[in-house]
Figure 1: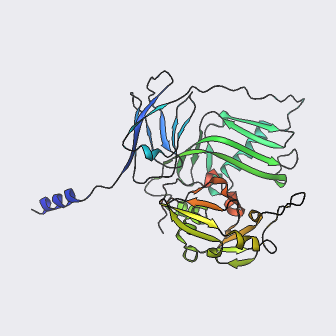
Figure 2 (figure 1 turned 90 degrees about the vertical axis):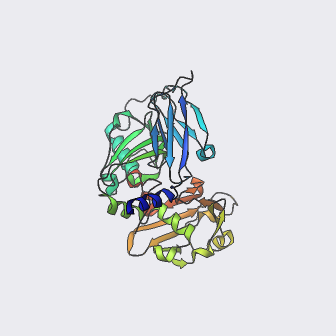
Length: 360
């Protein structure tokens, strides 16, 4: 009788709501592609197609992430806002990748060896944190490196996803590199002359931890990260999350500079431009331009400090009047904020998937 009652109770419980995206992947001749890799960018949510090219992705959450489709020898396909097609079978067609001849730079002697450039790539792509130092690229031979002598820029390309094993955070990561540049003030690879480092791409994570063995290390990676800050801003939870916002060296109230409101199920953050402009004479770093052009308020650098954790001291520039934060802590547009210090130093070796949930 007890077992029967338990079964009835379980049968009467509502099933957990699932977000499902499904469809078929074909080549240009409309032939199904088996074993194509389909994933939500930045998450652990993925699937592979069967012999009919069919895939089905199931997620407990609707992520603000594009759907990516990857297959060797074909261009990676991106589908924005894929959850709008929920309940429909998508038909996705991949185009054959065109091999581009990279521009040849004629020089009597290359400025730097591949070994030297690869060392910098590892540092600027994986990072130097525990996560970066304990990450390894499995297909380094696929990475094409060049150095632009005229503009002092190290560039990297990779026609296949970069395969990274992060032994610290215990993830396998596939990273489709879209852009990678390290700019210097002169022809050198010396970090003392590094002007700017930038990389962009899409990613897919596979959790390889055993019995939550990486839980503590993942929590440490989350605390003080950009994602942690975005959750703090959208939830207006600065005190409990131990973040302090400074204008120069003066602590300020975040609400005086950032107005958070709800819109379309996400948070809209509006920068109080008047308040920020008032800080110009006494805070931040001004970028002076030639001519009678008044410096914009976006050149003010605010500082962030997380109490009892000096490693997370960071700088932040507001590059736009408005930006948005979704429920997973992702902000957009991506160029709305510019980070320096600790947050600016975070690299691929520090990444956590979008669907990672921090539990104190």
